[in-house]
Length: 301
Image (cartoon, rainbow, N blue to C red; front, side):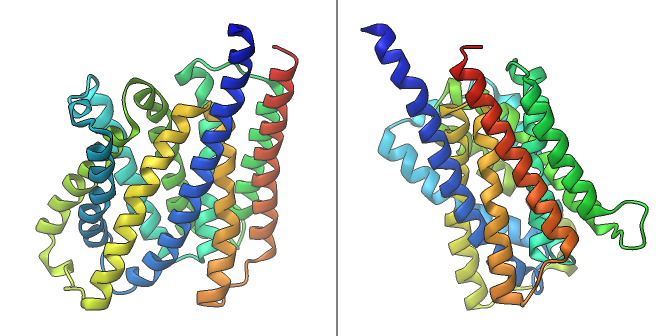
């Protein structure tokens, strides 16, 4: 009986992880489209600071509903701070890139983060390395090079900002799974929200000239994006708790489809051929990783 139950647990965990990450990406993609418009008028740290306050609301609601306030007494405060700090760095770089690059290109580059996760998870999370994973990672990174085009006349230095955001995001995703495994995802999401506010506030206070008082409509949009972000970050943390990073991470690529859609609808942005080629390669690399991991599990390796 126990072996039969065990056979059901793994697929259920993987499915829940995929559902959580897909929902989170859809929410964050919608938020990105709104933030790109706001970034024209408001500074990066101002957006992060205001949005972070409202991002805590859904997290606090979840903590109350689960009656898990005691979980805030984390056993890994340093890991929470480091993870939160990396997320702040990643998002700040993303906002800087999104202000000067097309939405699809920016998101495509930052969504190379799952490739970094898949490449680094064996060393950080002690997950087994398979040849399929390395093939997928190689194809995906080649897609990044196609989009960035280093050394060519089409190279845009701003693309390196988006790539830096991806690396910081990947670094924050790795400890997320371990933190999720030792406590409720809402607790980790709570510390993430706190770090967004604490990390951005000093910059806002140090640069008062950069502050632009948002109007009523802008405040409303910041409230909505904050609520979306808080919910999405909870879902991301839960996803990495339910399933292995190499299984969950490739599904973040669905954000590439959302980015192309929103960029075209709201800013009439038509992705260049190199961007589309890079997106296809990144998604192909992720799908190959998924295929390889499933085949390996089926073989009992």
